[in-house]
Amino acid sequence: MNGNVDVQGRALLTIPICNAPNSSETPVEMWVDTGFTGDLVLPISQIKQLGLRESSVVQTAMADGRETALDSFVAWLNWFGELREVEVIASSGQNVLLGVRLMLGRRLTVDYRTLRLTLE
Image (tube, rainbow, N blue to C red; front, side, top):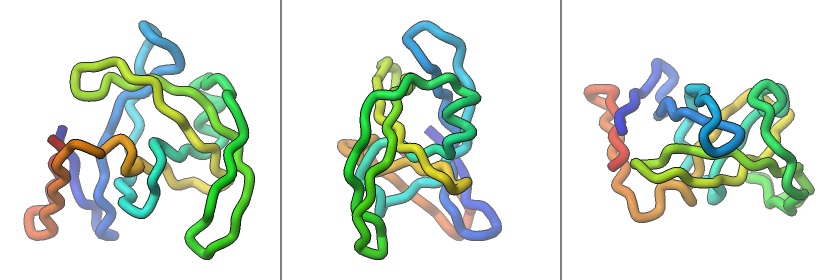
């Protein structure tokens, strides 16, 4: 899977998301966030557009140490040839984040000279 590095230095991948197995996919550009240990973070507006099903409320530790409860939703990804159910944390912000849980067992290479990203 290939991505790029934007002018702000963010490592980005575009990944197709669907709201149920065998439903149509919507490509979503995501910021690779190695500080986020979950699957995905999406803005609540995008979660509504995608029609994702709410699953639970999760307790989350924020970067500044605060703990908060956030709504969680279910999405589906074709992840390296395998249909995979993932947890999506709702955000009031605008950032779309791809977390470490999806990258475990994979090799992430970010080349800031060529502005290319590879996840294999």
